[in-house]
Length: 196
Image 1 (cartoon, rainbow, N blue to C red):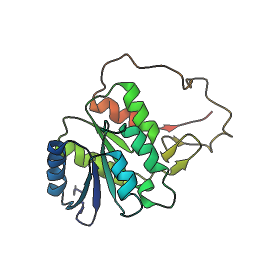
Image 2 (cartoon, rainbow, N blue to C red):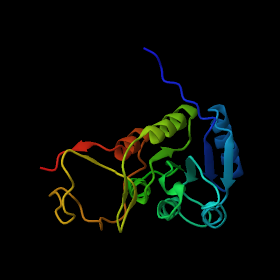
Image 3 (cartoon, helix red, strand yellow):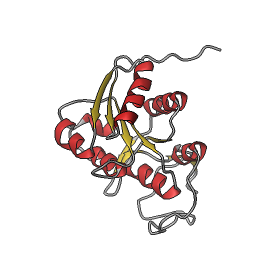
């Protein structure tokens, strides 16, 4: 069996993180993967005011807790950028805190995937490849913009009908412990469902 080979040398990445040590570590991993073109922004505000619309990025890596806004807010705002290719770029969020409520907020903001810290190069590479290869349709509604979170066997309902197992959006704060990377991955990966 032959393994797939990936050439990341023609890609550009935006790293959004205010921690210089974390940026150096992440940048080194990306360089080891062959991804040399990296732009760093310490805050979400800098991304939105200085970079969006001026530079195209093939990949966005974002810390979940920025000094000026939550990573989920930045992801959501990037997904709503009109006439800008960054809205469709794979977004990988890095976080040290993974309770279900935080993972849900990041997924609902439009992130492709979430990587739990501490980050291993193998896990980061796998998530970048998964996000890049993922062919989920981009969905835009009043409350969500990002990759489709579900695959369906049937066309979607008219927007009014909901399954009996759906929960309301007002479920409150999670009180459970952090999720493992495997639990985060299973939560983020779309699954084939039947709307019968």
